[in-house]
Structures are given as structure tokens and as C-alpha cells.
Image (cartoon, rainbow, N blue to C red; front, top):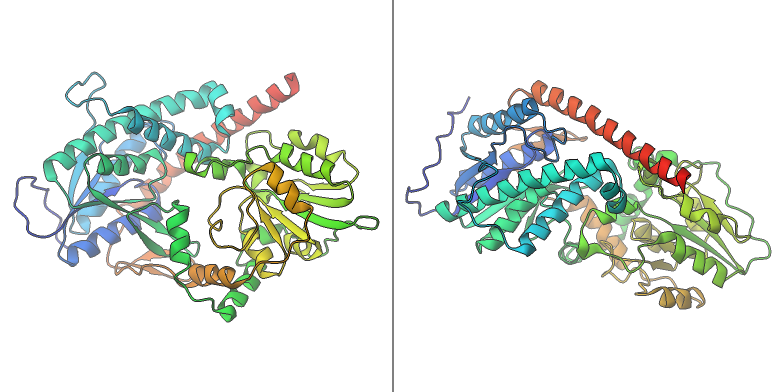
Length: 479
């Protein structure tokens, strides 16, 4: 076993690059593995690395929504021991007391950014849209406690940055408040940052100077890849197999699209999970936020078209009511609606269609690759790639539907496929066993304890989610 790391000495002179790596989610295995592997590799390469971790004693966060003091103890102990067993220096982010006035209140724009990170985590976990979560007393209380915890972490991180003056800070993800406060602090102190993530194939990737949700930077990276059509063909064929795409398991092989006799054009519309896009923040705000009204308008505008509306299977797990708004659409004579639990086959629908409409999902890529003219509504990771027609308003969308559109070139769809297959940043201390990440020379401290903490947290979150679903259902009936 390697020697334990020594405690960080803020006043010690260092000529090497100083880097802080924050362990934001110690109870989540892949997050911890990537962060510790990255920190150790940076240290091996000569950097002066400091690993920070939360020192809360009962705070609410994305891995401890119930605010359990036991979970907090396991979490901070796991973070410290895992990092020190890897030979890394550690420093706890000690939370100031609630009445502490030693640190100035952050400016309004930082508080707003932090609140957005809180909402991002809550939306992702409880699958409830912001309006619904604001009306739910239980979720509203969780958000307040989560905000208080991360506000203290922000103040503590700013204090650490002022004392240590690192050259850069690195953290996993950067979207939830648990990790976003690191980026807020870095910007406030004029310090650079990187974010760590895993790819869709569960391999490590480092984003230099931006988050994993900066769609413009991500698309620039996608465009650096070659348009290798052989690789792309294998990639898109793989997505149709249940072993490679979990949603393909819900695609019925015997599915038959509706008969289109008497209709001039066939249009399939693929919805995305509203909570996934809402959780990405204001930079992802769409001019088409109300799926139902946009689709209703299109179906009424073109009664000679047959529209098939396909809910994403992932929407079945949402606590918010997303189906009732489509009652009017479903009653129209030129529409067929497939709800999240209905049997359908996405690829059969694409092949059946004359035009494909998406709300930013990967179906956009697949439809382009399959040679279908595609209209994409709202922002996505593909909106700068010229693989679809991207209207900026409902009026422009309706005008496009009335035109004879030609398919876009599949060149950039092929580049995205190559990005998905080949783009990752290998790390010395983690390997991939064909299914998931495995440690290579590092170890997570007492992983069985983290599993216990996560199990109890998952039970709590399921209870909250069930209450949120029942609350939404009650309000719908009352209305």
C-alpha cells in the first residue's frame, strides 16, 4: 500500500503547478474513481495537487437529500480516506456556522447560479419540473436545505482559494450545486477550471475550461473527428440493438406504423424528457417549451398530414404530468400518439416518415443518418452541426413543415458517431472492463459503507418522488 498523503500546508512554497481537485460526490463510485485517478495522475506528472472534500455534519446535497448525519460521516470519511490512501494531500471544506459573518455574502449572480445548480439536482433526482417542485412542500424544503449547504461550501471554497491561490480547480460534472459551487468560486477568484466526466461508453473524459453541458464547445470537439462512414455505420446499427441501447429494449420488432391512406405526408414527432433539458439551466432554455401546444398547432395547420407523436420511454418515470396536455392533440383525426409505456419502434417510425421532428434528442442524428429530412426544435448537442433544420420560432417551424425538405448531409452525423466511439481521455489509474470503470492502483475506502448509505438515500428519494407524483395526480384530479 502506498504511504498516506500528508496534510496540505497552505504557506509552503511550490514551484510546480497548483491544482485543486474537489471530490464532489464521494458516494457515487464512478465520480470518485475519476476524480481520484485524475488527481493522482496530475500529481505523478509534477503538479502540486490538493484534494478538497465536504466536511458537512448533516447537510443536504445531491447524494444526501435526506440530510442524514450518518451519510455525511460516511461520505466525508470515504472522500478523505480514498484520497489519502492514494497518496494525495487533502483538505476539508469546513462549513462556517449559519450566523457566521466572517465571509461576505456572494453577489446576486453567484447566488442565482448556485440556486440553478440546486434546481438542476432536484429536477434530475425527483423527475419533477420546476413549477411542480416549487408547489410541493416537501421538495421545496429539500431545496432550501440543499441551497444552504452549498452556499456554505461556496464560501469555504472561496476562502481556500484565497489562501492557496491554485492555478486551476477540477471537479466532476459541474452541473449540480454540489460541484457547481467550485466553478462559481473559480470564476470569482479568476482561476481556471476543468470538469471531469464519463462518456456514454463509461470512459473518462476531461473538458478543458468548460463543463460537460457546454453544447457549443462539445460540438466544436465533435467536429474535430473524421467522418468515417464505416465506424458510423457500425455505431448507428449498434444503437438499434437492445444490448447497446437500453431504450431499444422497448422497441417492438413487430410494430406496425399506422396506415396513411388519404394523407399527403407522414410526419413523426419524437419528444424528449422535459426534465433532462430543464435541468441543464437557462442556457438551454428553448423557444419551444410547451411541447403540446406546438404540436397541436402543427396538426391543426396541416390536416392533410398524418402525425405520429412518440413520447420518449424515459418520460414514463416523470413525477410531473406530461400526458394530460396532449388530450386535445390525441383527439384530432390526423394524429396517433404513443405514450411512454406504449409499444412502438422508433426506427420503424423514422423509416415510415417523410419528415422527422425532434426536440433535441439523438433521434435527430439517427434520422439524418437514415436519410430523412429532420426538423429540430430547441437547443441540443447537435444544433450547430447542420444535420437538421433548426427553426427559431413556431411560425418558422410551421413554414418548414409546408416545404418539400431535402435530407441534410450525413457527414457530421458520422463525425458525432466517431466522437462517441473514440473520444475519451485515458487515465492511468482507471481501466475499463468492457462494461464499466475499474480501479487500477487506487481503491475506494470501504465501498460497502457507501453502498449502505446509497441504498438508504435511494429509498428516501423514491418516497419523495412517490409523494411528488401523488401530489401532481391529486392536483390534476382537482382541476
